[in-house]
Image 1 (cartoon, rainbow, N blue to C red):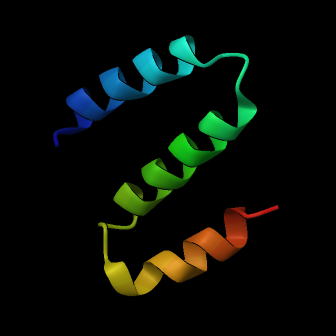
Image 2: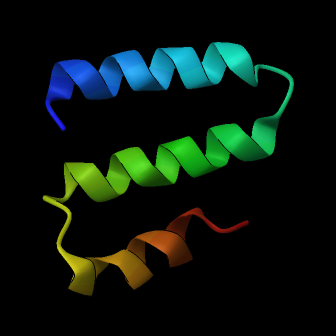
Length: 52
């Protein structure tokens, strides 16, 4: 998925679930995963950092 497509996806999802903070948290995690180059070995670290 391109960065442009990702931004579009993010805004649509956030506007759809603006009252749902849990969904926002999930989107943030997804964006962080993509930001790290989507390397599976880094996912557990990201999830650990973002889980309250």
